[in-house]
Image (cartoon, helix red, strand yellow):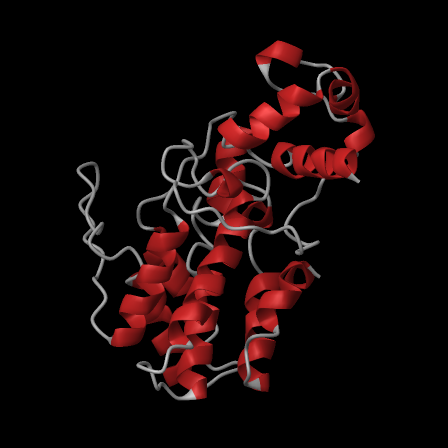
Length: 255
């Protein structure tokens, strides 16, 4: 089940019915949601959100930040209100590259699929399609509104005639803020303890992607030029899985 990739995040949802609905939402999500990068151009998200599974990691980061914010005493929301916001965080980009049909059609034609500007509206409609099932319609509408307002002030595009709604309620603003912070390139988030965050290749066969040792086995570079790995760790904002592998090899070196 796709939702198993979000086991840690689902555990933060306190209401059983809302948690069960969140599982349905994730299990029905387009396959690409678990595979593509958070930024189709690489310009607008930190390194951990790029590469394979980047959008999934971005989503995990949004919920993590949201949970930190709503845990503050100045936000005494009811638990169900908070839980509905958690579902919105999990589903806010669930149509980021468009519907599954649109995405697959583009791929079939050999075209690169970029972020779809109206993805908040598509994702909100994705939630509204569950009306009459799982949760009360009012709960579903609350989630949908949280999703369609998550872009905040970035609600227009010169290439589109669409104007996205801006957040108004406190919870809407927090969902937007969590998404905004998770997309800042200078804020790094560790997924070291999250075994579901990456589908890592075998470190023994992974080849270095950088020029100096390009296409050499990384484990061999660790033996022949360990100082290079130290330099990478200190100076380069590496993508995954390179970041995890370099840290692991350096840790083994010191043990």
